[in-house]
Image (cartoon, rainbow, N blue to C red; front, side, top):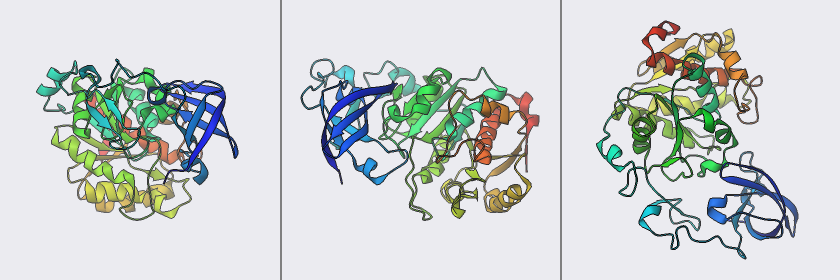
Amino acid sequence: MVRWRSGTVLTVRRRWHGAVEIDAETPEGTVRALAYPDLTGEPEPGDRVLLNVGALRMGLGTGGYALVVALPDRLPPDPDGDGATRDQGHLVKARYTPLQAIRLGVDEQASPHRAVMAAATSLEGMPVVTADLHSALPAVLAGVRADRPDARVAYVMTDGGALPAWFSRTLDGLRAHLAGTITTGQAFGGDLEAGTVHTGLLAARHVLRADVAIVAQGPGNLGTGTTWGFSGVALGEAVNAVAALGGRPIGSLRISDGDGRPRHRGVSHHSLTAYGRVALAVADLPVPRGLPAELAADVDAALVPLAGRHRIVAVDDEGLDAALRACVVPLSTMGRGLDQDHAYFLTAAAAGRHAAAVLDPRQAGSTRKL
């Protein structure tokens, strides 16, 4: 449940799109906290703040902040007067929680994109890369841009991790390099809001005019160590959505040579379950050719059961390491950087390169089916 604290803002620290980091004094000492000004208003030194310190007390890596719930003595004004006007939309995210946010859905009546979305029925063959973790996003993008620097790439963020897109510093750093972000399901704070992954994908194609879309959850990942108990199981459903809408599903495999947990070494059990047992539609599953020999053998063996359902594709990884090292944001997954888990990022970049090859048949020689 919620661990509440009352505190006072001492310092306003760094900020990025949609988020402000502060230091707050509480009866237990100073804590680092995060505020979302669109929800709480702008915190200032001296403000009294109500905090949720649960994730901080648990020591969660991605959630290791206290979160500002309210500035109770200086509440922000209602948007557009009463906060319930037609222009504010009626798409409710984080529904029936104390901080539910009312957003304008890309396809609802008041949206300027209503007519486009009402007519949209197909992704028209658009390649869509699905990834388990948010940390794959910049690597997939780097892989696309290595061969197609002109490609318009949209990010469709699901609600398996962080709900506010504003939480992601990675996404903040990529804003100028993406056609836009669409937050789906209970997630919110993107350039566009959608109620479902299906609507988000159609908006990526027909509103943002994307050539490629990347589907992944926000920062953070729910996992219990059991076969079905992880938020990335939704990857399989994303593959089904892409296929149902006439897109080209490309699954970014979670492959690791740096994770100390046996269930995630080689091909993660997340990928084996999501693509092997949940995804009913056929997807391309790219594997980089340059994996170390022992790891490559383990990967080939693990993918045998998936080969009966999906297309396992070998991808030339020449130049991908350089593309990853030139990435405009830091690469990190579970606290490991590029050199600590090279296979993870290389595999994500290979998925991006394969998406670029699907866009341009002249690049088809860079990939082959195993």
